[in-house]
Length: 295
Image (tube, one colour):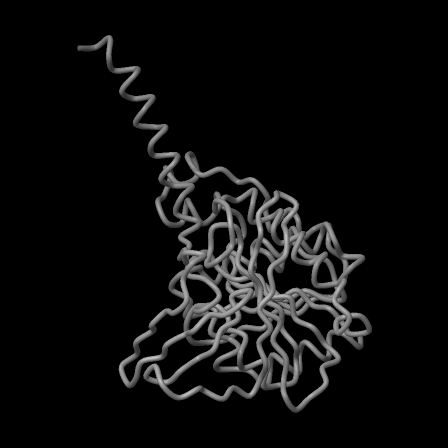
C-alpha cells in the first residue's frame, strides 16, 4: 500500500491546484445561437432579444421595449489569441462624453450582469466600453488567466481605434478580478491611457488564495501577473476604491495595492458591498475621476 502513496499524493496535489486556480474564473457562457434570454427579478421578468452581432433589446415581461437612457452598440472583435469577443459600447443619449471608461469586469457572469455596475457612471456623462473575456457570454474560447490578459490588451487596442474615443480621456476602470488585471494592463499600456481606477481588487492571486484557504491557497495558487508588482511600474493618475464592508475581497488588499503604487494616487475608502461604489457613490467617484485627469 505504501508504494502507491507518492502517486496518490501527487494526483491529490494536482487536483487541488487545478481546483484552486479554477476558482478565479466562473463565466456564464451563452450559446452563439441564442436569440432570447430571460432574466427574472422579484418584481418582473426581463427578456433580452438578440439580433445581428448579439445586439440586445430589453423587453419588460417579454412584451414592451424598455427605453434606456443610454445606447448600447454590441460589437464583435478579435483578440490576439484568435478568439472573437463580444463587447458593448455604451453612450449617454443626452451628453457628448469627453471621458471614456474601459471597464474590466469581475470573474463571474457575463455582460448581461456586469454592465449594470457601470450604469450609474453612464448617467454621469461618461461613455463606457465593456466586454466579455474568452469563454464569457458570447465570447469564444476558454476562460483562462492568460486569455483574460490577452483579451484585455486586445480590447484596449480595439477601443482606442474607435472614432468616438479619439480626443477623449481614456481611463481603465477595473473591478474585483478586473481590478487586479487592470494594474497589469495599465502598466503595459500606460502610454495609451490617461488614468486608472481600481475597485475592490485583490493584491495578487496568491494573496487572495491564501486568504480564502490559509496555507494551501498560497501553495497551490499560481500568481501569473500580479497587481501589487505591476502597479509599481505604473506612473499615471490612480484612484483605488475599496469598501471596509467588502466581504469578498478584504479591505487590506486594496490598501496593499495603493501602498505599492506611485504618485499621483488617491485612496477612496467607502462602505457598502463588494464593487458597489458606482451604485452608492456615483457623484463622488465621477468627480474624483474628473479631478485626477486635470492634475
